[in-house]
Length: 147
Image (cartoon, rainbow, N blue to C red; front, side):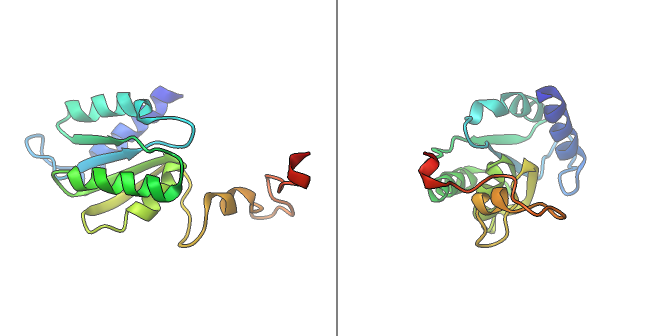
C-alpha cells in the first residue's frame, strides 16, 4: 500500500500542471506534511523519487502537540523553500496544510487521503460528523469520561 501511495503521489506531482516543468528546470518546491502518530520519515520514499527527478523536496517534522504549532512548523519550512510551493498533506496533515496554505508562496495544495476542513472546522468536527445518509456519527462522543 505504501508503494502504491508513493507511486501515485510521484505520478501526480510529476505530471500535474503547473508542476510539469522541463527536466532542466523544476518550477516548484514540494513541501510534504505527515499525519498524526507518525513522523516525517514516512515521506522518505517520496522524497527520494522526487529529488531524483530534480525537485526540491522538504519534509516537515511537526511536533504534533497542537494544530497551531504544526502550522507554524510548516510555515517555517515553506519559508525555506527556494521556489513557489506545492504543499502536500496526508491524513491529519490535511488540516495543517489547510491552515498553512494561505501564504502567498503556496501555489497549490494536495490532499493525499487527508482531512480537508473548511475554515473554522476541526479534524474532530469532521471525524464525529455523520457521513451523508447516516443518522449517527462514526465516532461516539465521550460519555462519563470513558469510565
